[in-house]
Image 1 (cartoon, helix red, strand yellow):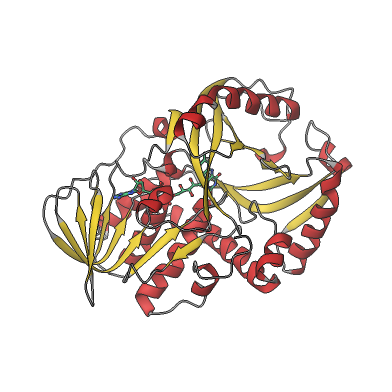
Image 2 (tube, protein in one colour; image 1 turned 90 degrees about the horizontal axis):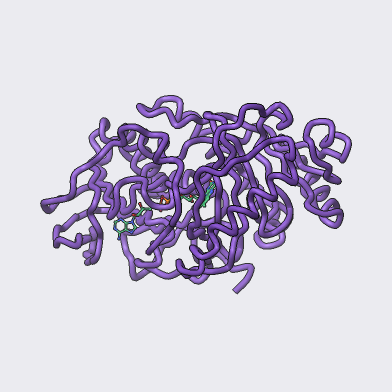
Length: 405
Ligand SMILES: Cc1cc2nc3c(=O)[nH]c(=O)nc-3n(C[C@H](O)[C@H](O)[C@H](O)COP(=O)(O)OP(=O)(O)OC[C@H]3O[C@@H](n4cnc5c(N)ncnc54)[C@H](O)[C@@H]3O)c2cc1C
């Protein structure tokens, strides 16, 4: 799949990316992980920490899937609100999902502090503003539900917003303790740690076939090498449809622009992450080298030609949207891209477990908080492999009732 096009920013932040060999022999392991992006790397880290023998393969260079276009706003609140998730799954289940996402952010922070490559994890608050007056009542309901469950969030009125930002909005939710990071450095850091713990990593190694036996699975590479494993985690990102299509999963296109460094952020309260209630939405964050990342303008297409034909226009529209909010900041574009972007109909990521794929888990961290969902699903799947059970598995299995079919 042609996952993305354009001029990417994250690869320019790393001078000497790690590299790994191609698989040239038949091997066996406890767990085979297919995909060395943020999903696969987080799984490998958790399993290697517990002493399992892990093989991680990627058909590209590690991290060069969707992870390299991830704009990496690290948040627990997703595109589908708590209120909306509660309608679909019940309040307790929706709250549990959000709590797991919150824990995943804490875990990403804990892990990040000890990696051999520093992923620039920085705690940031988030401003989620009402794009129009009609959305204020929904924001208010969302605020009360979040508060009932102890989430650290405030409801701001127009005065509180204009006191801190150069734009006017009727209301906003102000979330405390979200984060930003460099997703490519995060993956490189995890992989280097995995390697140090004895995990085997192979790049340019594409899985093209499989065979299932009673107690193990055998996956084949394009060059007919065999990997025999007791468990397999398919963490192939939006390309997991090459393994199994999932009717709850959707594919669209998203856009981002990264500006040149900006001299003065004094009008941007605490360099918060910013997004809005409109759908599709526009979001923005800053980087450690003082750039601005502006993203969104999602389009409902999964054809790369259509996606790419809109990159330049989307770049201009994203910059206009930024200028509407921050007329005082001169945003000069330097990098811009279009990329496929997965979601689910019901707003929750998925763990796929299928009869036709014994011994396998397919991690589908689809959605706007993909990095955080990667963390949640990685923990559940690795707990299941390590201990035989995970209390939260049911919440994410593809067999849960669909809100929309
Ligand atoms: C434009 C954009 C902005 C985003 N912004 C955010 C954000 O702000 N916050 C957030 O949390 N998330 C965001 N996301 C989502 C996030 O990028 C993804 O959820 C995350 O990177 C997915 O990681 P992954 O490991 O699942 O997939 P990937 O990074 O795509 O890794 C999967 C890997 O599997 C490999 N693979 C596939 N098939 C095979 C095969 N047959 N054999 C071997 N290897 C294979 C691929 O080469 C790839 O490297 C964004 C995504 C996009 C596109």
